[in-house]
Length: 501
Image 1 (cartoon, rainbow, N blue to C red):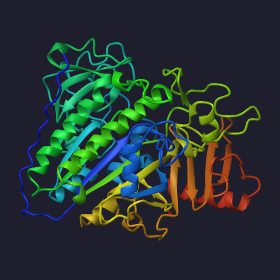
Image 2 (tube, one colour):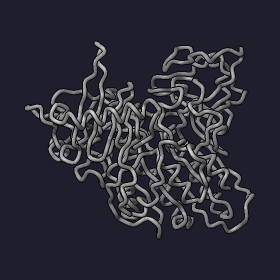
Image 3 (cartoon, rainbow, N blue to C red):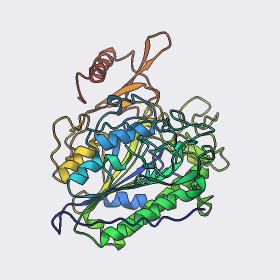
Image 4 (cartoon, rainbow, N blue to C red):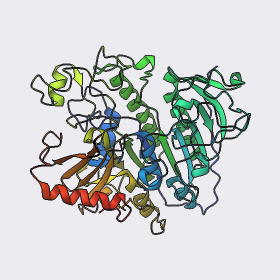
């Protein structure tokens, strides 16, 4: 039976009282499109008043990269300030029960906060690996897969999970490691499992001892726990907190709560996005009511682009790729603008950006980013300063005055000046990667992609994003000098002879 979690955390102070360090909340959506937000796409069919308000109170970035187009590696980049291809998992998402992508000696974002005297909590989706206890001492059934009929058949529900979120910097964690494993953790203990449409824990011994959480109740489940933590933290303001809110939304399956079904003109995908925005709004309202807003940094982003090309009433919600004829291009083959799609009653999650989740095109690797800290970040400002999620850790380190050793965040830059609205162009390039290991390089206005072919040769793409943000005109043959330089630069970085240029 599903039981709502009362997840109250202790925030006992171990540092001097009346700290001036800001609280930090990172909200990381899952498969949210760049153009799902009204402030990024005025033709969006999804109402986004809470996020629009957040943008009006903070600074909105238009040129931000994940920098890889799938879940696990992006989370690694965020948590370590390091490109994921430098880890053992060179590309793609983590499979069931695999060991952590994060090396035991590697400093993480939450560990940085811990060392700075913060209480660190996380809710939702980890997806960076963990070691699960088994009854027979062997690997968990389903190891290394996304689906197995006997998934978890030898999991020891009474044991502790190690090498997960708590072992990499979180004082407390509520959520799953990988959704296809299904198991929900409270710190290191398995307390429940998701009632997933596709994945299962039916073969797990003693599964009756844990809560089965319906998918359409998981978002309010982790939100309620987050709100309870904020209430508790507001009573103990002598210690700052880092809260990581990582909902499994709008990732498929589109498990929209009944109260939100039909709430938009963008079909079940749009409804799910709308539901996410509602609960994000609940977090923001709680900060206001608890008088935590002024001393809390809020960052909002997505882990990659949307898997859906379009969303509309009557759509097949099970078709994640959404490759339906006549829906993203007109009859001449030209990409349709969001305004044209909206007149047809369709919503374009990635807007004018080409590609979807898993691709190295902009629709896969670009993310919205909104940052708010009243009195410190400008309100209602838009900036085209280039930013990557690898920059979050060194940027926040500078704010909380934590000294990072050289090389700790090799692919991250301190872009605090960008958050303040200053135009300094500190980041001029970023390495990009698809889910199937296609690499690209953004360098100022230019975008280079190398696509390996079966014959061992490569196909090259080159775009001027300032003139062609939809990546429709390949200039590889017209600009051979630029192509050659960018390929050389990318090769040097991937060989480890250079970091981000």
